Length: 301
Image (tube, rainbow, N blue to C red; front, side, top):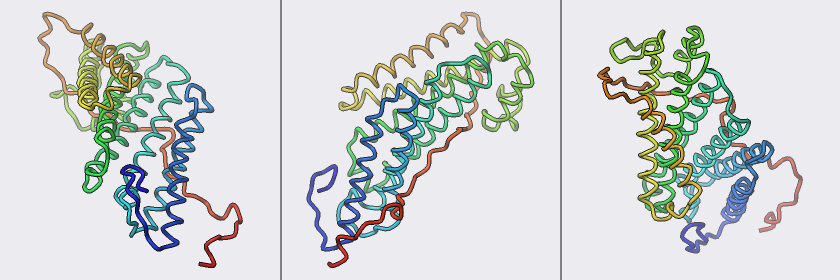
């Protein structure tokens, strides 16, 4: 039976039966990952491990099964599932970093921004695969909406932490650390000139202007995430996710509003894109069939 439509599919092939078993194993890994307590470090680690194993199972099928009769085992669908599993694993990597609690310092904020940008990047890749036919017609609308909403959410989060690094940290005036930040976390900052405001900020006013630009970008992305979420009837029922979207949007908006001045006639700057960086880039863990010796129950067929 197809995992989403419930339509039965048959094929007189032992290979297809084996593929279905492995597909179910991959699905089981996703359930194990989702059942972990991600409020603990061990739970986050186990969630990452199981999402990566699920991605490995689907990737193995993608590389070796090309004529499955069901849509859920078509190569385009499997490729999308691999991308989705890795995006969720990367999301857990960020959660693990935030679980330790917020730490002060320019470098810490930049690291969180890079991690959030990497999560956004992976959800963007997932959404692009979801939008390709025939996968788009096959998937529920809520899947596409969730992936796109999370892309904008984490993109906004990345910009928020860059703004926090410039505006709220005690070492934000350290020129050496600022230069390192601009060279590593802000995309193409080395090639920009002062006309678009991406030169190295040496004064508090310059840091305020650039931080404000990133806050504006954070607010825009959080608003877009909320808009996409509200357009989907199924997503509106997920109260926890909706509350998170509202709180992060309110936090960014309040911080941005606090910087608004009635007589501020300075030119609006364009926030630079943020380079995706991570301590652990999620990758598929392919199943190792040589670890356990078994007798193939299909060998006589």
